[in-house]
Image (cartoon, rainbow, N blue to C red; front, side):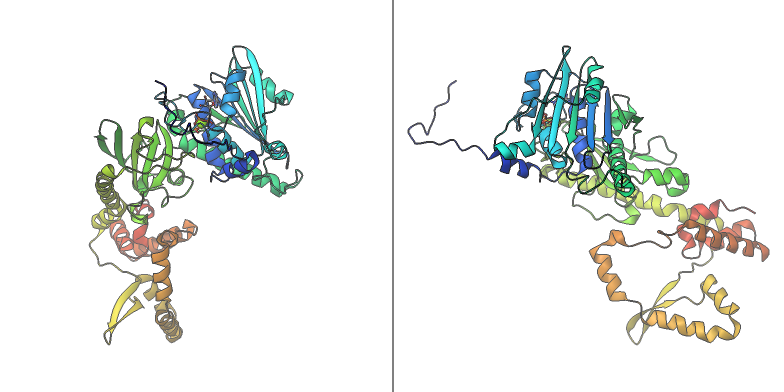
Length: 492
Ligand SMILES: Nc1ncnc2c1ncn2[C@@H]1O[C@H](COP(=O)(O)OP(=O)(O)OP(=O)(O)O)[C@@H](O)[C@H]1O
Ligand SMILES: [Mg+2]
């Protein structure tokens, strides 16, 4: 049906955006290099690629990043459409496996990192290529695509495939700005960035990699998946599926207690941002991870909830309801689901705290019922609160007794510390940024704490205590109670 033009009688003027100004705006959408590369991998997956090769090639300011896939490829005309900013309407219905939405990703992701983008593609045995060069667009002030042939060895890789697409980023002004090819520091930092991207891809596409739907090679080495849910590990609790409207599925996981994992597995499980940061919801769209550990504004991240991770699965038909963003790194739950998500999360968080604290408590109970020795104690003097160091704490008592005549000095020192703890500063910092507060011995080498535990154990056995009694005693002393995994594995 032909639509009537309500303005047909009025004077009209076509005002297209200035190409050069528009391009600079595209560059500021807020991608980082890992979300930008992931956006191109989305395109390769949507094009049914089975293998994807990501290359970071260091040549100082001439460095390039390229992404080659063996997907369906594009014809000359299809490349031109793909290179068009806004090539598809976001309201268009998409194939249920399609990872795209806005018709922008290829351009916005690429321009966030580089000033020269080439798409070369092979389909029906024909190779075609087109380039956007932002400096040229600025110069001619027009969206002018260039038919520039990529260098031979890049093109050869594409030619060897029966079909596929090669994206090349050149003029990487953000990653390699002011660098020199021969400078070792510069090349090291380029490859460090590459390492961050590699980790990110192993996380974002872990379900594709685990099920062998795709393989991603990074500078020719295969990327391994990073599974946030530690599937298959002993001690993992899985809270069963909860389905909403038949479209959203939610599954809660409480990860195993630290003592159930080897040090290597524990370290690996923390992910790229650390245990505390990686708790929360993991939102997937068509099995591709959008949000990796976030309580969506419902709760704060706190150490004792770090074993809680919740998997949320969305189909691409809910993009609008969840306010999907161009970068595919934000999803906001619709209001009607928020309350339910919150109550599911609260339940899983409670279970996670139990696991976090339980192990220590069980061991304490198993080995002894002796009193607990904290290091700090709250005291009330003349109606005011003070914090004192517990002189009965076995380590502190031992040190004082060993000092003989100098006991007076150490008591003076302890008093000085007690009277001047910067309580207001600690309180302010704690409320501003609780995640940055380190736990006892958290940032130091655990060899120290292990040695202290080992020495104490030996001393207890020497004093005639049984192994059980010695372990129980150690678990009743702060901060050793936080490390039951080291106490349980003690032997003579
Ligand atoms: N590697 C590729 N193989 C085949 N076709 C591709 C490839 N990359 C892009 N295309 C085509 O180009 C189009 C535009 O890609 P672009 O990433 O800009 O937008 P999109 O993927 O449709 O949506 P979004 O902005 O959400 O990423 C795609 O819809 C697809 O048809
Ligand atoms: Mg895309």
